[in-house]
Image 1: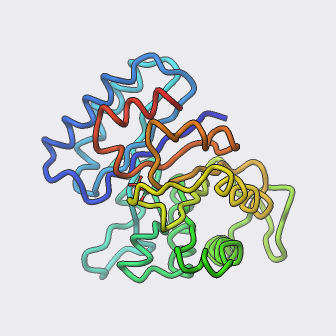
Image 2: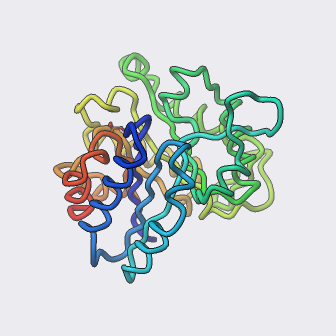
Length: 260
Ligand code: PGA
């Protein structure tokens, strides 16, 4: 399985010119890396501009590592939904991936597990690859509820979506191309805080997630990942990482990629 590194730019940078500059310096810095898939998730308005030739060119330059583009959110319908962007539009803009259920969406924009479930179904329906984010708050962790929270986010978020795994929860049938789904474990207290989850604890969460969804679906870690700690997550079995803050500084991001 290729290791996957996802850059979540969030609501940054402020202009397309800056976004291109950032991408170009990352592209320049990561020549000759093997067996890596790097997914850049810029804000919606930059997606089309990144479609060609930047990404195609970057992929051609390298033999084994490749750049892909992802969106940070989507909506599950099309029509009279002012301000929303549909999965079909994302596909048309050149996105291959979409992040769904990021904690900032859940916390700031009221996204529920049920909405996340609808978004995942819509995205898989147009063959976008889904990065489903799950994670507990500091309070839930303190109360020992981490496992319950993660399991509920998986159960409801993936309800009605068949998984091709050894473990098939009741009610799930049929087949899902597992390559189109990734789970990102992102403890909320570790996001943007510099207080990254210790690998041992993150490793426990990974095992729980794997028991629930099987071995074929990649599981990645996110939350204050940087060049210094990236390797420790891969060492406890994660298939990759999701990076926010450190993906906005090209030097740090390139170093993180190289150290992974
Ligand atoms: P961070 O963000 O790397 O800045 O902690 C991660 C994320 O929100 O996905």
